[in-house]
Image (cartoon, rainbow, N blue to C red; front, top):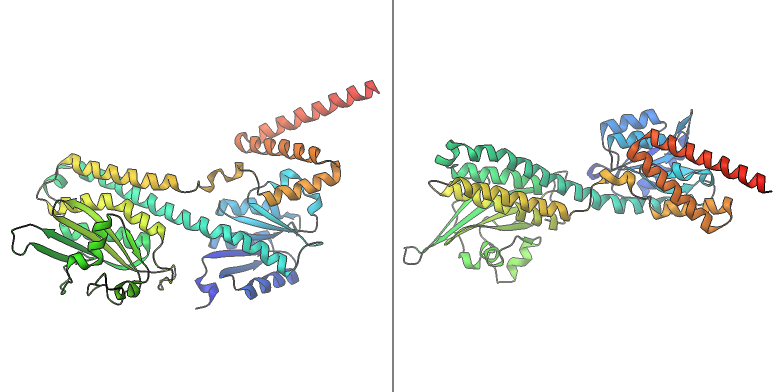
Amino acid sequence: MSPATEATETVLIVDDEQAVRKTFQEWLEGANLGCRILSVEDAEAALREANRQAIDLAILDWNLGAGNDGLQLLEDLYLFNPDVVAIMITGYAHQATPLDAMRIGVRDYLDKNQDLNRETFLKAVRRQLERIRPAKGQRRFHQSLVSFREALDKVLPLVRSTAILTDPVPLPEAIRSLFRFLLSATGAADGVLIARSFEAGRQPEEICRVYDSQGTPVVAALVPFANSIAGSAITLQQPSVMNKLAETSTAGAIQLQPFERGRQSLLAGPLLIGPGIHVVLELFDKKDTSGRPDPEGFSEKDRQLVGAAADFGSELLRQALAERQMNQVLLDAVGAALKATQSVSEALPPSTAKRPEEPPPDAVMERLRQGLRATTGTAGDSDETLRLAEAIRVLALRHGSPALQHCLRLVENLRGLLDSITSSVS
């Protein structure tokens, strides 16, 4: 499979000159950046592509011809994907005004007449991809948590009903429900649930049972629980990731169960059920977005997600294993799960919803500062001008066009007043 087929980021080139589009596309394809590359000649075609798929990085010509503006196109692309960022290609960088440069998503400028060549072009693209990729991962993880919280919210009305309280959820259904979420959220290919009970004086004292992701019992000759990965997870009391499972087993300290042998990666998460009962969820062989084995295996985000799901999963299984459940127990479990997902969500970087109000990147500000110095002649004047422009931009974003028109009238009135004063003094 080609890199373009496996790509998760989409780069869109928009330029009305065919030779320029062809050159940019050849540079990107030759660099093997692992991106899907699209190339169009005008704003209309760009918006059609944005309607078909999310555009992550737009490489836009400042002047698209036929009266079209690259900055206006970027604002339109923002409506399709608020996380889109852009590199602006222009032969008029010295004419860029601060308000224009601070529009949504502009992250870099390349001047056709000065610094645009294959090296500077690819350097700028790589710099943006290095920022886009981890941000997309965070957003996917956040969306998984949102989906989980929505699922929990749907459970609450059921918990409050008498039927659920008097008739516990069957164990197979409880296991299937838990695995449906976890396999989808983490990308795992499969999984099992291992349940171990221990009671001194009973024969046998230890009983272990294994269920697959459909809740069906798995018949296998099991290794001792204390020597297994599940036993280690119970000891650690936190989810554990093993992305090189074969190497783990050769160390000798841990023995693999029959259903673990031949697996590439494993994520084990303990569930707290009650005294003498140990339950461990094991997820196997993480897949990438194309459905193929992910060479990186399970991530830290997957581990955190399983940890957040453990509170709810524990209570769901308690209900399935008990003959009756008290209302408050399961309600508390759902509350604990909601709290856990909320704490993880709060630890993530903020979403891009407030990005328009954030200051532009340093590279954009410095380019503007240089342009202003060329006209004002002093660093102090350019810095103050940028501060004023940024304040007006944020005010316009918060309160709309009327606020911007009011600011313009105030500035024009002030200019007229100062002009009259200085003319009278001279």
